[in-house]
Amino acid sequence: MYNSKNISNKNYSVLGGNSMVQVNGNTACLGFVRAAAVQAPAAVIGGFQLENHLLVLYVGKKQLGFTTFLNGIGLS
Image 1: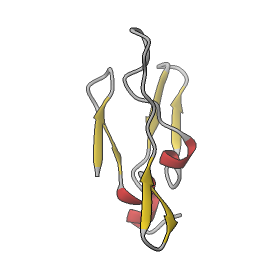
Image 2 (image 1 turned 90 degrees about the vertical axis):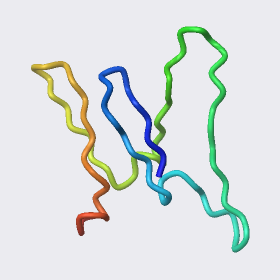
Image 3 (image 1 turned 30 degrees about the vertical axis):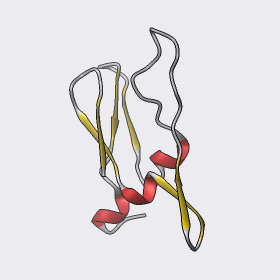
Image 4 (image 1 turned 180 degrees about the vertical axis):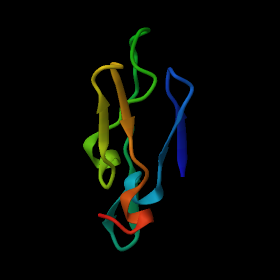
């Protein structure tokens, strides 16, 4: 499991199934992006990492949240 701290000092966990892509029976790949710009985001979360999660928008508070791993709680 990979944990990343965001600017609000909260954890967002990326579990194995959402961090590695199975290429074939013997190979799995971890994709990442090198951020060369000084003001680049600390982490980029893509669609693959967000699979089996729901995004929760708190419009009044101008916040974005994530649910727990849905398969882990019996949902998908």
